[in-house]
Amino acid sequence: MDAVNKLAPWREAFDEFVANDEAALMGRKSRDAAFARFEAHGLPTRRHEYWKYTPVRELPVDMTLTAGPGKDAFAETDCYRLVFMDGRIDMPKSDHDALSAVADIAGPEGASWMDGVFGALQTRDIPGAQFQVERPFADLNMALFTDGLAIRIPAGVKLDKPIHLRYEGPLASHLRLEMLVEKGASVTVLESGAGVLTTGAEIVIEDGASVSHLRAQTEVNGTQFTALYAQIGEESSFKSFTLSSDATLIRNETVMTFAGDNASGHIAAGVMGRESAHVDNTVYVSHEAEHCESRQVIKSVLDDAAKSVFQGKIYVKQGAQKTDGYQISQAVLLSEGAEFNAKPELEIYADDVICSHGSTTGRLDEDALFYLRSRGCTEREAEALLVAAFIDEAILEIEDEVLQDTMRTITEEWMSARADA
Image 1 (cartoon, rainbow, N blue to C red):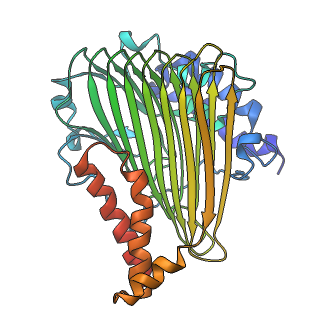
Image 2 (cartoon, helix red, strand yellow; image 1 turned 180 degrees about the horizontal axis):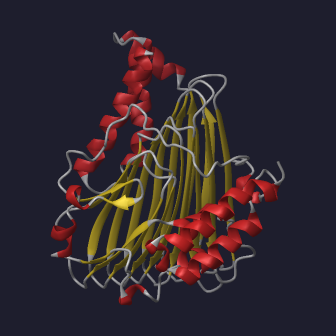
């Protein structure tokens, strides 16, 4: 089947959606432009630079999503829970009214104060870059999202507990978040669940504000694509951590732009893969202001024929002096068939910066294993201890210690399941 025929079912699905679904009225013009870009690009192949290691040859429109054996990582977390079932918000299960009491929140009808940023995830250029990151599934999400939220955290408000976006149901749905975090405000956003094919998020962080973002992809059995854009203002911060395990295919894309001086942004991820799991973390960091700090910390533990991909770029615009950009990607291979592919990049047009990247791949330290075995640990117990310590460097990027422990528990359970297999 040629590229045009592969996309024909998606064109039919899009035309039917915009003709018959009331949700299509939200972002109507942006949807048309986004789908046109998706059609022009096509499903990504190895010929597309940012998809060399994660080609997508087939993507059925009517695919069924199935959840894996994992549990909801944030089920016991005290939070404002917003549950989406088959691509639509489930109001009886959601704390929509409670969240509305402390923040401005709008559903498919949109919100006037978000008009200026809605749809910018796909259309925003990165000034000065030699080329833009190819993001066909961000375009697909913009074209077909069935439900979405626009949330504004008012200036100075420190939200008392996290907002948890929970995805459930077997339909291959598309969901979207637009968030404006005003000056001096702070919020934590959590994501979990297998019931979504694509997610798109744009988070605008104004001066002096802070956002923490945690995503648990520990229930995904099939396929999931995510696209997140964060614009960081002066003296503000953004921290994102994603834990992924054992999915057929996961692709997480993060674009982070420093729009104000003296800001910080950290992107971290832990990947745990068995059998034929494939997880791709692609990150593009654009430094467009002075005295900003970025961190990318990616840790992968892979068994059987699992594959992890990391593509990370640090772009430093001319005039973005005193930039401090750091990037590290490391993988532990627990079997001969596991594979890790890393593609670190630096593109720098300022002369007073500190930027570095590094990547390592190898087996667990034999001396450390021998030491733990000599102290009474079985081989699997020793491996579990070393894996926990290895992943923990990424987990430490999470500020909240309770949420750190939540991620550690999932890591321990994954290793225990591997030991029992």
